Image (cartoon, rainbow, N blue to C red; front, top):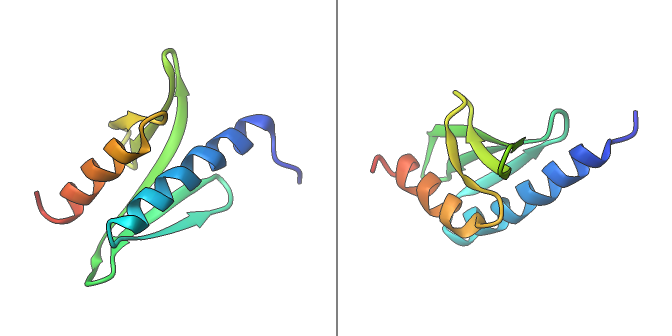
Length: 90
């Protein structure tokens, strides 16, 4: 099965987010289909979350597994900061 342009865009944005998360000491593993990141703190592996990337009316956005928007995909650093804060227990 070949990936659609939408999946390529999603994977591109998730890759940018993964680099930002790893720079903050978190582990980010890309799930191939549907594309999403499994994010965890290597020091507290029980604390993990899945983040995906979806097109909305105003562009592409990172989204928590429960559907709440994390942030716009054009700013992966801000999204990574928010994710790291949540995984750290605020």
